[in-house]
Image: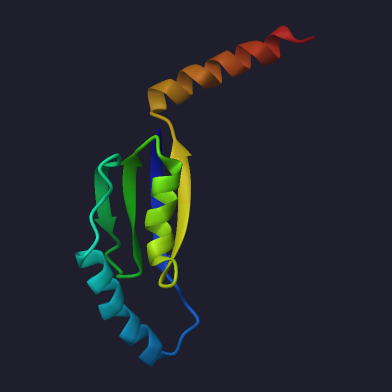
Length: 103
């Protein structure tokens, strides 16, 4: 299954707390490696420095959750399961035909 992950930095701390969190996140990230059962198609940072995005493929939802739990004190995550546009378009067509068949 493919997922788009979006993350932003947690807000609410003082400027000093936010400043201290950045080296901590970088240390965690430099010692972390993607699990072997996750394929990262894209791993992107936002140009404004407030987060990023990843396109990941995995069938291990628990492994995906564990990765995010490791960074949860510092980052807010949104995880979106996604389909390729061609597959979604075919499903939309099937759904339309179903609705048309019900009178």
